[in-house]
Image 1 (cartoon, rainbow, N blue to C red):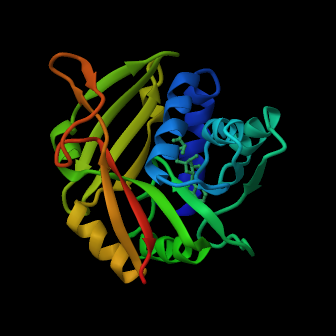
Image 2: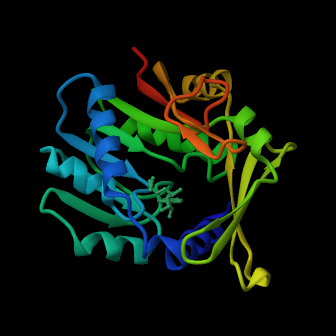
Length: 247
Ligand SMILES: C[S@@+](CC[C@H](N)C(=O)[O-])C[C@H]1O[C@@H](n2cnc3c(N)ncnc32)[C@H](O)[C@@H]1O
């Protein structure tokens, strides 16, 4: 997606749905996972694509000093309402924002893959430069097998919003289309690149980043309409990579 398309999609998604719905227990759980997956004490955090800022607030509550970068001004304004002094919110694009410092941890939760392969590589190179020499980044990667199988699934969300998933085989991108249920002519779609563990390993290498851990996430069983917290690496919705600078 081009920057303008991403901005339009995430603004509209926030307007239709995100403004009204929060799951604070999920963000607390995510913050606990991050502390565990980092595996060593850390203080400064850069969070990319921070959305409504919920994770940043939870991390600040755990004594971290968090800088967030988020593209959509409305999301940054929302986050600022609840802000703690330990969170610095920056509105801008992670492709060109200037951050003249380094961080112990760089996080990109749920959203890597919004651009082209070349842009993703550029972002990984920037993550390399934002990391302290002994820092680590945690990045969520969409898994291709799950998304191929999920293509065609439709659902209705609270707030009378409908959603359908798709998969573009030629570009290896999942697609996620939203619309107000009573206004199907107002459809809008985001697409995110999916990478196998091997593909992302190769891309990280080009950015001089070494993957030192893979953490598989959950998967939805649509037949039983139940969510499994942890699936296999080849069947999860997304998996998290932990990367460090190559020595
Ligand atoms: C799928 S949402 C995830 C939000 C949040 N991380 C979460 O897990 O709830 C992706 C976020 O990345 C932001 N984003 C997309 N492109 C961006 C860019 N170039 N620079 C900064 N943020 C961007 C979007 O506006 C959106 O808020």
